[in-house]
Amino acid sequence: MNNQFSNRYVLLAICAFLAVSSMGCQNQPENKKEKNRKFTVTKTLIKQLLVDTVKTAKQSSLITLSGKIQADESKMIKIYPLVSGIAGAVTVQQGDAVRKGQLLTTLKSPEMAGFAKDAVSSRAELKNSHRALEVTEDLYKSGLASKKDLEFAKGEYQKAQAEIKRSKIVMGINKGNSTLAYELRAPISGFVVEKNITTNMQVRTDNTQNLFTVADLSTVWAILNIYESDISKVRAGDEVKITTISYPEKSFDGKIDKIYDILDQDSRVMRARVKIRNPNYMLKPGMFANINVSGQSGENLPFINSRCLVFDNERNYVLVLDKKAHLRVQEVELAKRVEDKVFIHKGLNAGDRIIASRQVYLYQSLKN
Image (cartoon, rainbow, N blue to C red; front, top):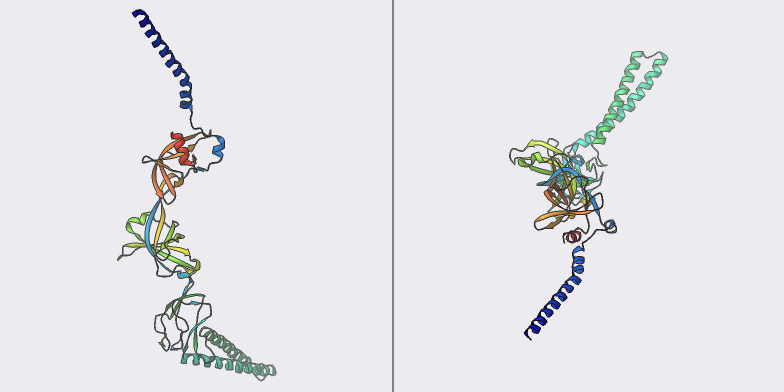
């Protein structure tokens, strides 16, 4: 009885083992399938992605400087009086827009009367000398005048011609109206950026101060202050981005076109100049500006757009596409960021192709 019971126990244990083994054999292929399932990048998927090529350039250094907007001196004219007198009504104020030839003010000047008198006298002298020359020529033909008399008459006529030319030039420079008032007119179209005259003001030619300054503000200068520590990093030709307090969201692009190689002994700065287009005259002379200068060092490094980076666990990665269209995750070490450019110290070479779209999704898929 006991033997039968023992045999039955052994038989049940064997059946249970076989059942478990059978179940294990059935599940094993499924586990292998799950294990062997991996993310693959197909050629169709690659065609849908943006691919960038790694380029190389001199490493950029972004330097922030302060500066000031001023009028372009090549398009700015200071107006001085050529005669003394009393100012009439001043028709413009500082900041006004003026067109070329527009009347700014007049000067009541006794000198203008003298210029007018000289012009009248020179015309009369020319007329008299011309008549005398004609009479002398007739007398010379008749034998009643010598050749010396004829040459003298010709000389007087030539002097009168020269005098009339001089008086016309003087009157042209010192333009006056019908009342012989000296007129100050705008020599160019632009804006009155300086005004040093008022109505009924007495004006003298020995005063060194200009009466008006008119400037064309379609282009302006930004004068940069370069501190001693940054002098070696800034060169002519460096690109700059300029912002102002008035337009914090608007940036103005330009290039350094001149560096003044003199250090100011008081402020200890060297100055540089940037010529900027001024659409809608947004930039005004006197505005303070912040200038970001993209300088360059002597080291050539590969660079990519920052959008290609994947940041994970305090490290940076990119997805590299090799010549066989295989995709791999590549860790990179960054040298410097300059706006949207990232210079690579280690991990990439010029000519490498990297994925520039959906890279986070692909990185996670390849990582898992």
